[in-house]
Image 1: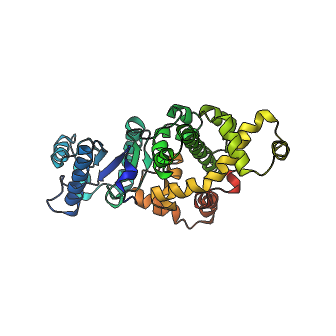
Image 2 (image 1 turned 60 degrees about the vertical axis):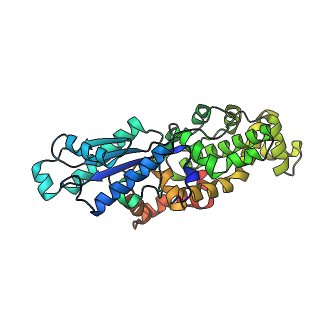
Image 3 (image 1 turned 90 degrees about the horizontal axis):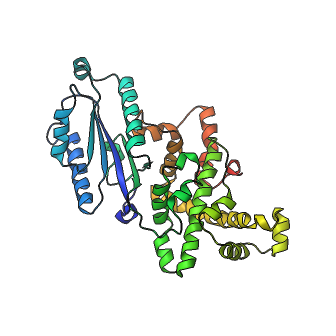
Length: 344
């Protein structure tokens, strides 16, 4: 989990709170009341710093939720959406059926995120403890890094799964790979080219997870990505020569390429060298391999029918052999940065 607020600059939290029934607001000084007070205080502090976190409150209550919305407002949340799940009086007295609660909650969260926060990625943070909330994530809020391309150009190169999260990934990778500091210590053009190479490595890595997870094949196109991100032939050639000991003729022969395909091969060499650093940076940023794995896995297969902390535990502590076999390759990919099933 994050402890350094600097790594959240340019991002805002997206948080879901589910109230399973009973009188709302919770009793003063109860654990639920303290959770909401702390969250509202954090949200107001971040608002004062220029970042408005977004909250969805799903309340299993009778009526239209207007009374409960006023109670939420009284806590001081700067931006909050309140939705009543429409419980009957019997539900309130006996508590909602767990399966019905999960189904309603999952559907509402999926709809809200798709409509209001399509760029959000699952994220465990200290600011809003996942133990207290149904789902927590982050999304792009402000660009802080000098990328030499438009984010939309990267989005078009990413797997379809991550098209809407391109801005968020760039913000995260900018922090994880310390792009700002790197650019400050390099000449402008070189810093921009290296930033583009980092973005290309992210693109390849997300495609690799698609292949490792079995969601689709790895369809990363290094030639197309190099063009889209504005990576110069000079930079590609210089880096390829630095990484490879082979001369140009031997390089072409080794990779069975003509000169026209050299840009893609050169970029593939560069991204291969950067994979380990990217994996380590992302793992540290998300708070460990498990949290990074969850962000990648849940982007493909969203899980909203249980609180996020429980869903992660259920996913990573499977007992059935078939389930373990399905997780082996993607887990190896996240743990080591690559695996055979991620190859093109």
